[in-house]
Every structure is written in C-alpha cells, then in structure tokens.
Picture 1 (tube, rainbow over the protein chains, first blue to last red):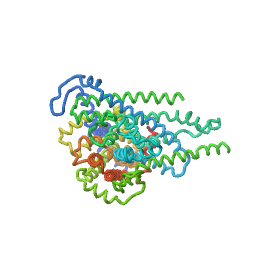
Picture 2: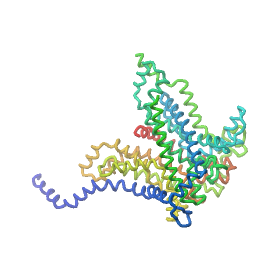
Picture 3: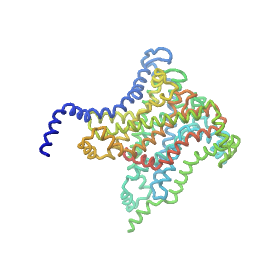
Picture 4: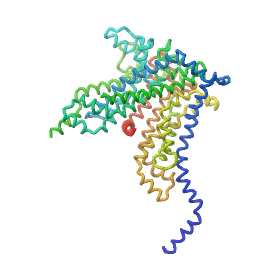
Length: 317
Length: 283
C-alpha cells in the first residue's frame, strides 16, 4: 500500500507545483505587506498628507474661500513678530511647567506609597486612576465650578483663612493655576501607576543591602529609586510634554465659549487655541498652518530640553 | 533572621504612607463625587456657601430639563459618541493586531524601518498639526457635520500597532508559528488560529484605552461637526456656553457623559491597571 501510494502525491505535486509554489511564496513574502497596509494606507491619508500639506499651506496666503497665493516665508516672518502668538507660546509653556513639575513630584511620592505592602492594593490603584477615567471636558466643567469666583469651593476655603475671593479667570497666574490643577488632577494618578510599575522591577535586595549599610529610607529613595527610574521618568515627562504643549480642551472649556481667545486679554490662550482661532475664527488658513508648524518645533525643543534636564536630575544625585 | 525581618518591615506601610494614600484617594474621588451631588441639587442649593456635600432630590427634574434643552442635542450626542467610539475601537484593534502580528512574527524587507516610522509619528501631534488640511479634505468630500468626519481620521493608531507588536512578540512563541507553518497553515490561517487567541487579553486592554480616548475626543469634533449633530463632549460644550447659568443641568449632562466610562472602568478596571503597568515596563 505504502509503496503504491508514495509516488502518487509526488506526481500530483509535480503537476501542481508552479501555481502552488507561487502562492506559497506570496504567502511568505507578500502577505506581510498586506497585513501592515491598512495602517499605512489610512495613516498616509489622515496623518502624513495633512502634515505635508500643512507645510505647503504655511507658505501660502489663503482665506478658505479664495485662491492660495504663494508668499514664501511671509507667514513665518509675520508670526515671529506677532505678540499674540508669543503670548500663546508663553502661556502654553508656563502652564506646562506649572503643571508638570508638581505632577511628577506628586506621582513619585504616590508611586512610592503604593509600592509599600498594603491591603487592598487593587482598590488603591483603581482609586488613583479614577480621574483618568473622567473625560477632560468633565474635568474642566467640574473644576470651573470649584474655581468659580462667587460660589466656588476653593474661594470659600480660602475665605476661611481670610483670603478675599479670587476671580481665577481674570489674571494670568490665577488662570494658569486653575488649568494646571485640572491637568494634574487627571494625570498624577496615571503617572504614579506607570512609575509604580517601573519601581516594582527594581530588585529588592538593592534596598536591603543599602539598609544594612545604614542608608535611611530617604537616602535609598534618592540613591536607588530615582536613578533606577530615570528611563521611566523620561518617558513620563515625554508624554506630558506632548500633551502639555498641545493643551486645548481645559482652557477652552474654562473660557466657556468657543471664541478661542483664552480670556479677555488672552491670559490663558494656548498655541493650539491660537491655531484654531486663526484658522476657524479668522479664516487665515496659511497663517494657522505656519503656527501649527511652529508648535511642532516648540514640541521638538521641549522634548529635547526635557530629555536633557531629566538626565541631569537623575545623574547629579 | 534579623536581616529578613528588617527587610520585611521596610516594605510595610507606615503611618505617613497611609495618610498620603488616604489623601490621594480623597482628592481623586472628591471632584467626581461633587459632580454627582450637584446633579441631584437645584440651582439655588448649588449656590449655597459652603456648597452642599450630600445628595438632594432634584436629579429627576435636572434630567428632565436636560432632555428638554433642544439646542444641546444631548441624546444625539450620546448616541453619536457611542457609534464613533465603538467603530473606532473595532477598527484600531483589528488593524493593530494585523500589523502587530506582521511586525512581531513575520520576516519581511523594510519591517524595521516601517515600525520605526510608526514610533516616530507617534510623537507628532497630528491632530493639531493637520487640522487645516483635514478640514479642507472633509469640505472637499462633503463630510463636514457628518459622523464619518470624526471617525475616519481615528481609524488607525500608532500606539495600537506598537502595543500589539510588543504583545505579540511576548505572548506568541516563534515555535508555535513555525509549527503551524509546517502543518501547512497559511499566514492568514496562523493569524486566525494562533495569533488572535493569544492576543485576546492585550486586545481587550487596547480596546478599553481606545474607547476611552475616542469618547474623550474634543478638538476635532468641535471644529468639524455642527451643533445639531454633536458628539457628547461638544454637546456639553454647547450646554456650557448657552446654559452656563443652569449649573446643575450642566453637571447632570457631564455626569451622564462619564457614566459609560465608569461602567467600562468598573467592569474591566483590573485589566486596565494590569495593561497600563505591563505596557509601562515594556516601554
């Protein structure tokens, strides 16, 4: 039986080989490209094309309805002397610094606390992640209420210690604090969870050896935890940089109307708001595109600066 | 013995730790609690000083007023957000598993460069950068004001591909893929029978994250949608603008908009925490 059967498939095989082998080769060499193609196709249309087209538009004068006329770098030279643009940059960077530094410090403290032996670990972790689950719009609505001048909880609490009610929206410093509070409330717990995950990968005998040598908990935190966490801190700061420099929802909701001006004198207008105002309020599409590209440059600078800064912090201790 | 003991005690939570954690939980929960309390109060009570901290009996009335406020299109917004979020989630998860499988388990020319390209583009805030051309594209297609305008730009997600690549390279041993090939399985057959079952936990986490992210989307819908066909976030922005003095109605709408997220969180919180922590260590 076996002797009879053996040649049969070989013959059949020989007959069917060319198309079959072609299929097999396609399956190995071609199908991988098919698998990644949906991503790249959609990304090209909705990611790459807008990016390149924005650059092209930024070299043109275009007011949505009319023609696009090439103006070279005119939009950029105009932007560089536009006080409103620099005000938006100043606000964006200011709110970013004001929110990120306390956020990272608090997240480190919180992660350190969560890393201790405790009952109800999962519940604690879920608890600190709760703010992340609310939407940004909801956060802005709630905190705009808490920061309200006349009936807000914060002003009432400040009143208990004799501080006059603050009109949080009216000044740069106060509106920045309010917006930074919204950001930190939503993101501190998330960052703590990320840092906690990294903390748990640090070998415990490092701490035990340090304890034997008489290092206090504080020294251990600075000499072991922080240096070991450096890559994760870089990652967390990196994510915060992108989020912080594209800040939009919180200040827009804080303002309460879609004028995009960020208060009466632009005290909390961010660059993202500036772009949307230029494009969809003033219909200066080319100008808005140039501002969008400068925002990107700002992010690159911010990322590089943070990387340098975070490395130094970890290294100097 | 003593070293072991001191080593053990070092990880016990001291009083300070407990205070820090209690404070963190209080600060996390309070604003959410405050929102739900406000949704059950009347506008007069909401303006009490100090503000009320216990539930009242006005929830039904507030909901009735919310539904009667026609210019906010709140129910339309909720339904639209559900449609958009579910569509985007299904698409991102599917496309990410396909690409993740290819990047993690198949050898093909240019795969390293392509994956690197995805990582780089993850760092570009495409949404803000490309807002003008995207708008022009939607005008050209005649899609402004329609749901596909807020669905299509989000159908792929570099983070999703990255996450599924990571997950596939860890969850699926190469031998399993090779064995399936020897048994005569095609690449798509391997995807269906080997990869998808192994990726399921990772897919669940990705789905939850993408759902929450899409539900949260604000800037692009605000630009491209019209007030009468909003998503839930822009509907709340409309409430905030036109009815900002009706605080409790605004809080009622806001509370309703986060309830779907809380349901997801209560059902799958454990997986979300696990997924975030795993992802953090890998990254």
